Amino acid sequence: MVVKDVIEVDYVNYKKPSMIIACPICDFKCDKECGQQICQNCAIAKQKDITIDDDVLINKYLKGSSRSICFQGLEPFDTSVQMMRFIHKFRQVTNDDVVIYTGYNKDEISEQIKSLKQYPNIIIKFGRYIPDQQPHYDEVLGVELASDNQYAEKIN
Image (cartoon, rainbow, N blue to C red; front, side, top):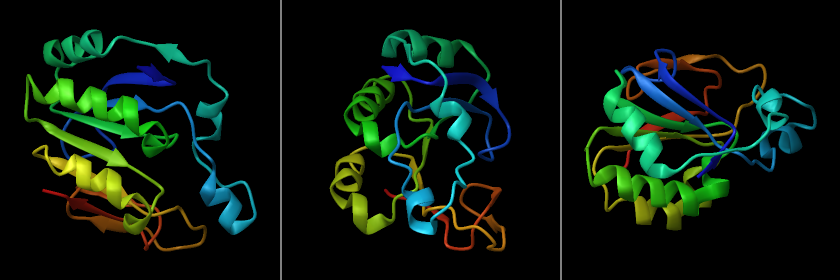
């Protein structure tokens, strides 16, 4: 799998300790739609790509203290083939939560959601960041989200 970063334990992005997998590409739809550079992940885009074997990453997860996987910035669904391959392998060893932070709206990724429904405990945070919105607490994630249009949903 090609990633920008892996954080073995994070306590900020989900209510359970999470291994963060920072995905390698994005089309910066949030920036394009609002007409200004607003992406909180633009620094990640400048990092070098890291290639890490799925099995190595899964073994790190199993040996660590994380209790969920969290795919996020850049854009997980822009590399959905590698993300799906990882989730398939991950599901062979654990049913721990997989959280996917996406800037896409639900209707834009309906085919990918359909594919993910075969797996238990998949949670997707939908919606682009919109500046000057009120942050709000999301019950599903157990964290504050930056824009009031963003929400998380367990898809199965």
